[in-house]
Length: 488
Image (cartoon, rainbow, N blue to C red):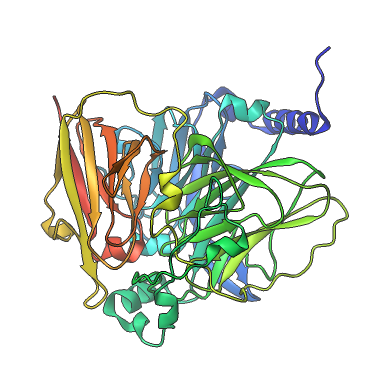
């Protein structure tokens, strides 16, 4: 007789209950799932805040799909402005990619549009491709489960991160791009001390290993937001997730922040990184891992018995933090303040985290048909960021032919790091600063100042695909081009 653990029983029961409670259209996929771009009200530190959001059929942010379930969705724009949603991490037909006017126009208020494609499994997300709307939190999780996720003896928890301002997104963007945000900022938070020590596998990263002594000159943060959110909440009132004592949790971290990189700290709970950007990696043990803007981390956490276990997200180069709490029944949840005693360090200035990630299923070996350098540049004053010396309006598309094996070298000659995202493709990190290796599969790679990162990919559908920095003010000020794929 097959044995099943209590956690496995609970997980199976919950999955069954969820399935049975689903409307017939969700199980049988006979009609589109409803997604609504709308406004909602959050309580941020006791103040009401009106933000945007993408709500699913159950009225909660985002969407979770089971193995084999199609992404069959009807998106309705309930906002009073036009919008369009990009399915980040997915490879839909280009016409469904969700970039306004490339090729489809945005949705007018009250308008709906249908989407239907086979989704890529893993931890992904959805967001507006209009920078001020992403600043306004028009984003949500998009989770596509694998069969092994349903069979695993673990509880899934999503941790959706954002940076938030009470000011209108347009005002925030204007302050950043005009240079006003630089006035009065703590410039100590604008640079960082690097030299992170590697402890075992991951910059293994206990608290003592996160400090260093080698000076770096990277500008880390160009705006101080009013709050940093995990699942729409601050640490003054965090989400408390009920867990089983000694249980295992799969934490799906999504960095949906417009302009903030976070360290994820599991505290006293042992953890291991098992996937990035939705793609499995060889398990990497540690207690701190970081995600740049738009990146995702799947972290398995083994809870050491019962109690309350804060999982914190630390803003790089600063003292601010947010997070959630995993707590067993009856555990005392102590208050955690939203600022730490010392600033968190810069993220991966030496690409130590990226350099030790290894894909479980790397790209097939084949000859490279095309190599191209993509130069990343720009400056804080005047606030202009470029690809190959050009802003979006002057762009020179990066060419490819469908079916080619392409290597792109992102060479960053600026003082800020850039999370570079390519639409419509999955790529593999294959070289860092001249050193070749078989790295992680991703859709967004972080390129720190004065570094070169090479990715390999197989060019897909003949179409115009966006290639851009996912730091929203950088994108808005010009750091976007096209990956122009032609038919073979």
